[in-house]
Image 1 (cartoon, each protein chain N blue to C red):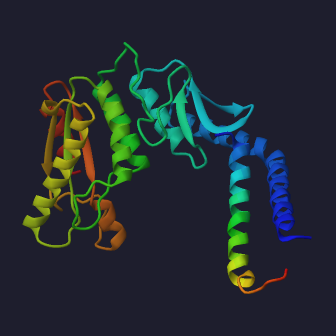
Image 2: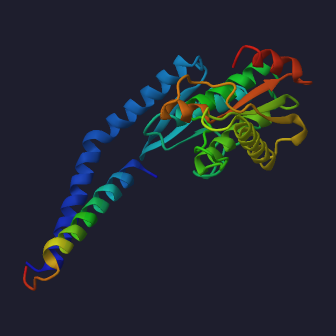
Length: 251
Length: 33
């Protein structure tokens, strides 16, 4: 047998193996994914949404359906997207964005929720799934953080006229003054990122707290990584009262 | 992308990588197979 035929035979055998494996496991895999997504949504109290995946052909792209309003929709998308194995998620009838770009398109509902709590929860859910974090000594906004910013901007666009406090934090290594400056720089860059994505600059305040408000205790690498972060406080129309109230809870 | 296509691509890519490694390790100086 010539070498070309051997390679071809091998390739065909591999393709057959893929087809057999697909036929044997594909349907179960997608069923499992669907069940996981639905369970996760119920666990987050988003029972109004139903998730389905393409069956013909089988696909890992989730389609959500149900009667929900803007911020809850975004939250549901974020929850489903975070399940390992799900390739993308969009709402029934809405155009799916490019995979690496505007995955979570702003909802076109007229029923925009202006509720501070709803917006804060939507933002918290996104950040709980993947926080905006930084390398030690750096305010560089990574590609991953930019994707999180895309999601956040989608949610924050629904929170019209609510104030947004962007808080920068550092770990406790190094000089306090330097840390304060670094945290301000981080907050400023995130604010600029949101403004680039169409959020009104006058609604956003950026402030650095240095290492004065750690999230994780201790000085090991894991705690430090958690503490180099950005947090968001959504406030009512004039903003200050809500932000200050939350800030004083020792966060 | 359909799952079927993903599975096919994944396995064929694995095959191609295996082929490349095999050629690199055993095939480079050999004239007959």
